[in-house]
Amino acid sequence: MQFQWDWLCLGVLLFSSVTAEIEDEEIQDADVEVEDFDKTSQETDVDKGRMSLEVVYKTPKPIGEVYFTETFDGVLTGWVLSKTKKEDTDENIAKYDGRWEVEGLKENTVPGDQGLVLKSTAKHHAISAMLTKPFIFADKPLILQYEVNFQEGIDCGGAYIKLLSSSDDLDLEYFFDKTPYTIMFGPDKCGEDYKLHFIFRHKNPKSGDYEEKHAKRPDVDFKKFYLDKKTHLYTLVLKPDDTFEMSIDQTVVSKGSLLEDFVPPVNPPQEIEDPNDKKPDDWDEKVKIPDPSAVKPDDWDEDEPAKIEDTDAVKPEGWLDDEPEYISDPNAEKPEDWDEEMDGEWEAPQIPNPKCETAPGCGKWVRPMMNNPNYKGKWKAPMIENPNYQGIWSPRKIPNPDYFEDLHPFEMTAVSAVGLELWSMTSDIYFDNFIICSEKEVADRWAADGWGMKKLVASANEPGMFSQLMTAAEDHPWLWVLYILTLALPVGLGVLFCWPAKKVDEDIDYKKPDISKSITKGELEQGGEELEDEAELEEEKQNEDDIVEEGEGEGEDKDEEEENEVAEGSQEEGDKSNKSGSEDEMKEADESAGSGDGPTKSVRKRRVRKD
Image 1: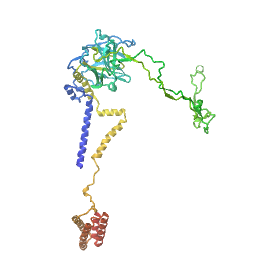
Image 2 (image 1 turned 180 degrees about the horizontal axis):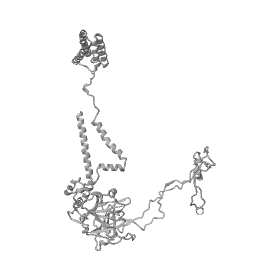
Image 3 (image 1 turned 180 degrees about the vertical axis):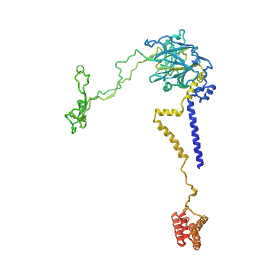
Image 4 (image 1 turned 90 degrees about the vertical axis):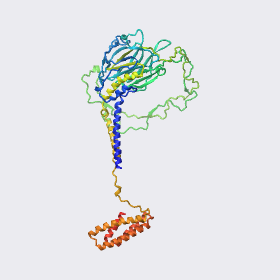
């Protein structure tokens, strides 16, 4: 049994150790998992345990048809800085003079990888580039994907991107906030408002005017993406079936329909309220009115006050009527710069009268006020249902003259350029690996070669679980209690189940026979022989001391006779109760003790006690 317990404990300890190692590996690998990577990207994940210095970075290359890509790893070509000014803004800050730089990440740097970094604070920034070829919204999905890292966190600012609408007069040097765009997508934050924008400009087919449509806010907490100082992957997918998906780090955070999940909706209502309709003067909207038949009771006295003096109150003993509650501070002194002509006559500040601290009160005593039992207040008629109630009035509905129905809002204005037009109170916002394409496999491969590598390096550089626990305990000391309890519980259970209390050897215990059960004659004879052997051993020991040979022989004869008597008596009385059996046995022992010599007495007494 003890052998089985040892193996069980050893198995539990080995299982716990293996489980802990697996969980630790899963935690380290969780941040670098990317769904739908192809075979090449999966091979990259094999070396997740290596440090960033051992990572070999290669500039991502698109594997299919793309409309725009930018890695910022080489010479910055094709990007144009805006030279215009922002309208309706103070002249001092209207100019787009914010500074941009191409550099690597400050933390978790990947050797050879660079990005576009917004460097200035409290300035307007604008930079843009033409697409390789325009994207026309027809029968192919639009996939827009790029990386953002708020290296210094973010106080107030955005990192969204605009897809500029195609037009003959598009000039990137004059790119500013009023430049027509088709889609705006990306993170934005000010104060405690964390957003992920998706806005598209929809063209009214009747008027030709454009109106911004904002995606409904997803029920997701975006705070960690702004404050963890890690590189995150933002992806927008628009499909020809008029649906959309927004993802962060390849996890969908919002999806829906272009027709149903935007404010204001794409299609206006068929009917609107008549602006010329007016509520009639006799329209009654009151649900309840005072009962016109109610009469004020004769005993209703509206003049009774709400509070009256308590006539039963008595002034407490020791009340100091002649002492004021406050006195002038005797220790106060007039300031040296006090000007009585300007400041008036100086008076010492008032302090509580120290004599009142030990007394029930000071000053003139007045009776306290109590609620007036006769007070009823101003009488009002009870309210009843209004028999003339007509409901809440609303204008009548008329057909909407501006109504239209666009069943395919996906068919937006074509785009031919990409731009960043931003204001930020925080610097060092990092952008990298822009791609616009139509195939998900192309975007996933692009993400694996760029963002996936950054996640791999960040995961390798993260502190171990023990260091994270210690850091957390420094910020929250109460966690030490939780740590101790967490460690003590399995240790205590292990001691309890793996090392039970030592059992007494059952083989050396003398078991008392159950006298109440019937015993066969053969069993009694066998028991008698065992008792005879024990008697002989005792007799031999006694003979060596002081027992004579004659007494020994007589004792043995007597002993045999008594044994036979005991066996016969036990067989006859076997079916009797325990009590009767014990009494007979004790009686026979007494008789035997009286009829034999000294040595025999000693042997019989021991035998009876053992039985």
